[in-house]
Every structure is written in structure tokens, then in C-alpha cells.
Amino acid sequence: MHHQSFNSFEMAQSQFDKIADLIGLDEAMRDLLRSPLREYQFLIPIRMDDGRAKIFRGFRVVHNDARGPGKGGIRFHPQETIDTIRALAMWMTWKCALIDIPLGGSHGGVVCDPHNLSLREQKQICRGWVRKLFKDLGPLVDVPAPEIMTNPQHMLWMLDEYEAIRGEKLPGFITGKPIGMGGSVGRQEAAGFGLVFVLREALKELNILPEDTTASVQGFGNVGQYATKLYQQMGGKVVCVSCWDQKDETSNSYKKESGVDFDSLLSITDRFGGIDKKRALDLGYEVLPGSDWLEQDVDILIPAAIENQITIDHAKKLRPRVKIIAEGANGPTTSEADQVISERKIFLIPDILANAGGVTCSYFEQVQSNMNYYWEKDEVLGKLDVKMTAAFNSVLALAKKKKLSLRDAAFFIAVSRVAQACKDRDWV
Ligand code: NAD
Image (tube, rainbow, N blue to C red; front, side):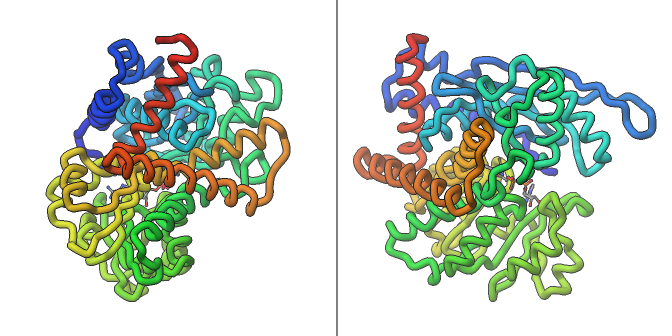
């Protein structure tokens, strides 16, 4: 999969610096919050199926845990770097604070490509990752979750390894587990649905009816799929979906002016969120270059793939009709592009708000796992809606009051809360 050399952590730090100035944080607080509290880098030796040994590189970064145990995903990606992980850990701290759940921010990963690994090899990597880190993981310490190219099965292997080492059942150790094995109903839907809950509030604020809108989505994995599903249920029409094509080693955009049919598109999508090009052509989709999803004449753009996808060149070329950008992915918009988007008065719902549904439901899963009592789906999604809507309203209110962009307002609230927790603990 494609990764640009752009450094996400520098972007996360410059976002922080800007907000630190706005809030007026003192030097010690800045030093504490602009870098991770702790980091782990380690090697995981695996016996491959052909009998050879192979060494994989693993990471875990805890950015801040003043408000509660670390919480964050584990990404499997061939171009994974410590800097991307630092950025994601930091964004996670802000996200948990903004949505107001008692968790801190962490993130981890392994440099590997599951496309080219057997299930047994993937299982070895999962178990190896836990064996290297178990002392610094746990329901009250740091709680992992799935992220790009990791799934409920990976989480269950990790849980099994952790419980074997600890000698007790601790389902609150990890989230994103399979339903029936400690998973929460609604977790699969959570990030995409949460995005649509705040999108619904944004449309209300702008006085636009969902049924009068069209959207273009980048990514048709977990987030992109469920965002598309609920947005269409709400009456909107997704006319273009872009995703990575593993065979062609490039991204493609799939366009259907009359709107994508969710179920048939899903039926030709693999477990990594890749759409089968030939079958898409058979279904009447137009296949366009990967970045064309951004050039569509739509009201709403939903980047839900990876970092650094909307650059300044793209931002300048966005159609005049674009009114809302809802960031499903983490860090999809570069800082320069952000500037242009804000000058163009596009209503941008920032990542730490728009995609917070995932971690919010992870928190619900952890709560259910710790008490070993599981809620019904309506209850989970209802509670998710309450949390997302409340966070949206507080961000919007502060943005209006202080004349800030939604992004700056969201970071302002989040950073203030984390700084307050550090102060209350007498760390600074
Ligand atoms: P996923 O692995 O399920 O899907 C990723 C999708 O992005 C796939 O459709 C893939 O084809 C596509 N993609 C990858 N590289 C691309 C490229 N260069 N161009 C176009 N498409 C590309 O991942 P996911 O869980 O849906 O996560 C997507 C994003 O949302 C990530 O940034 C992740 O950090 C963020 N996020 C996910 C969750 C969650 O709960 N799943 C929560 C919060 C944020």
C-alpha cells in the first residue's frame, strides 16, 4: 500500500504547538505533551511456513495516560514507521479526551504485509507481539485494538496469548474481539456510523437535508463501508468510492452517478477493503484513477483510507459544490491543504471528532468485558450517538465562541482536558 514520505508526527506536533500557543501552556506542559510518555521497539522472530526464520519489527507507543489506561490500535503495514505510530498515539490521546472517555492514547504496529502471510504466520506475529510487551499491557495499563489490516481474529489470538501468560481470563485486555468472544455488538459499525452521526449534525447546522446530498468516499474498508451504509440509509447518495488495488499496486476510483449499491459493491470487496476491478466493470462502474474521488462534483467528501491524502493541490481543485469534509481516516488532510480548505469555508469535521466512534465503542466493549455483561446493539449504538453528538455540539459551540475552525476547537478542548489531568495529578 502506498505511503508518502511525509511525516505525520511532525504534523501532529505542529498541530499541538498551535493549540499550545492558543491555550497558553507553559514550557513543562508542552514538553510533556508534545512527545510520547514511553515507546517500545522490538523484534519478533517467526518461523515461516517454509521452515525459515523471519524477523519482524514491532512497535508500541503510549503518548499519554493521565486520563486513564492507554488505548489504541495495532496496524499491520509494510511501510509502518515509528513516526506514524507516534502521530496516531498522540491523536488517540486527544480523541479520547475530546469524546470524554477515561482513556489515554497509544498506538502500535508491526511492519508486515498480511496479504503475503499465511494465517499461521499472522498468528505467530500476534502472539509474538504480546509476548514482547505483556508486562506493559493490560485492562488497567494499555488496551490494544484493531486498526488497518488487523481484525477480530488477530485480537483474539492476542487475548489468548495474554491470558495464557497471565493465567487468568482478562477480556478487557483488548477490544475489537469477535462477537461471542468478548466483542461488543456495534463495534464493527462504530467508526463509520459515528462519522455519520456527526455528519447528520453538521447537515442540520448547515440547514441541508441528507436526501439532497451526494458524497464521494476514499476507502472501502471498515470505516468507508459503514459510513456509506448509514449515510445512504439516511437518504444520501454515494457516487464514488476509491480503494487500493493490491494486484495493480495502485488505487482506483469506482464511480456510479446513480449511486453505489452497497450490498453488491460489498459482495465484490475483499477482506482488506479492495474492490474487484473486473467485477466492478461488469456491474457498470466507471473505473477512474485513484485520486479522482476528490474531484467529484459532490457535497460531501469522506476520506476513510490513510494519512496525507488531501494535499494542497487537491484542496485547490475541489469542486465549488463541496460543502463538508468528514475525516474518517486519521490525518488525511495535510496542514497546507487544511489552510486552503478553511479559507474556502468548507465545513471540515476533523478526524479526532469524526472517527472517534471507533474508540468510543472500544471503550464500551472494554466496560462490558470488565464486568462480563453485554449490552444489546440498540443500547451500544444509542450510547454512541449520545457521545458523538455531545462532542460535536461542544466543538461547534467553542468554534463559534472563539471563532476557530472546527479542527482547532476540537484540539483546544482535547488538549485542555489532558493538560488539566496532568496538572491535577501534579505531573507538571
Ligand atoms: P481498513 O483496512 O478496513 O480499510 C482501509 C481502506 O483504505 C481499504 O478500502 C483500502 O483499499 C483503502 N486504501 C488504502 N490505501 C489506499 C490508497 N492509497 N488510496 C485509496 N484507498 C486506499 O481500515 P479502516 O479500519 O477502515 O481504517 C481506515 C482509516 O480510518 C485509517 O486511517 C484508520 O486509522 C481510521 N480509523 C479507523 C477506525 C476503526 O475503528 N476501524 C477508527 C478510527 C479511525
